[in-house]
Length: 130
Image 1 (cartoon, rainbow, N blue to C red):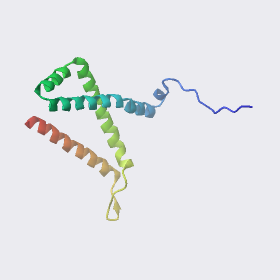
Image 2: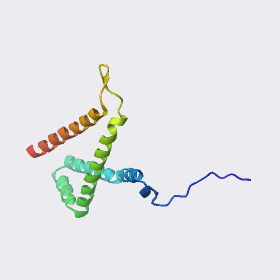
Image 3: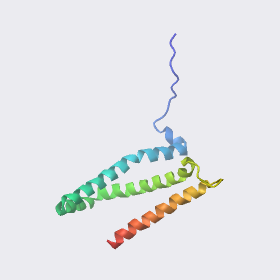
Image 4: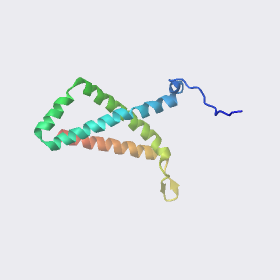
């Protein structure tokens, strides 16, 4: 008598049956585009250090419509990551106490969003000044 472990049968689209798993799979699958974006940015920094000709070649390559689509998709998925992370951050952060009172979880989320907005304004403002 042999005993086989129970292995449930799952379809190839099992994660589409539950919205929680769908969001999870989109977030995990988007890491491929996040890796592309980081490598593309690293190539841009490398070409910037290499000189004017390398920088101009990298800029010319960025005008390719395929790269435009990849960069736009990366931006959208990066925004999705930001929203999902900021929504769970208050629940995973260690409790913060001020005196004997615990800081409300909503305050942690507000601090995350405020920091994000201030950093974004600083980066965009710096780019517009330069």
